Amino acid sequence: MKSEGERIEHESFSKIERKLSRIPLPEREVVKRVVHATADFSFVRNICFHLDAVREGVKAVRDGCDIVTDVRMVECGISKPLLARYGGEVRCFISSPEVVSYARKHGITRARAAVQLHRNEIEGNIFVSGNAPTALFELVDTGIRPRFIVAACVGFVGAAEAKEKVLDCRVPAVVVRGRRGGSNVAAAIANAIILLAEKDV
Image (tube, rainbow, N blue to C red; front, top):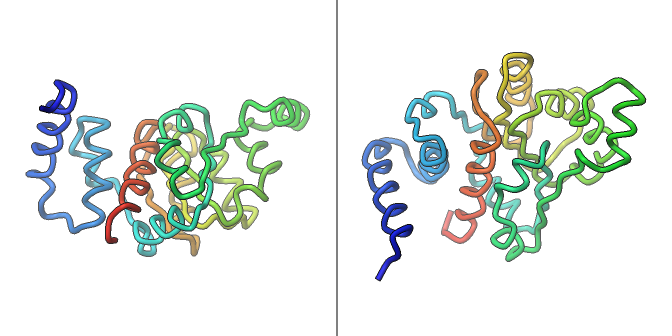
């Protein structure tokens, strides 16, 4: 017998799936997770899949890529045990003493500093942004090439512009266009990709 929580989750996803039936798989699985995390169907209009993003993201997970996040809230929302099945880790550098000191010294955001100082950990792995546009600007403007990007940073200053820059890159990405997004949205997308790694995608 299913627990109360399992019944609620099952009913929620059933309601969501009925409204998303026109979206093709596997992209529907990603959109479904975002709608579930936000209770907002209007996100359907904002989510963009760049360069066969879902399949490339799934390949990156299966190949054991790490996930590097822009902020701790995104890191906390991603399922570490699920990713660990494939040999990957979830990592965030924004609070390290080295990053904090470097950001203060150079007058830049900690998110930008983390990308500057840890580009080697980002190259060839998965980068997930849910909060910090400056991290995406640094990523794109300096030519760092992750294997896959989730660009879902939220905000009124730079968020929309940073995400459009990601769409100009030759890196597969799931992008939430405009000002909307957030840590919960970014984590939902990342978790959807990890879960899809278990399926025939």
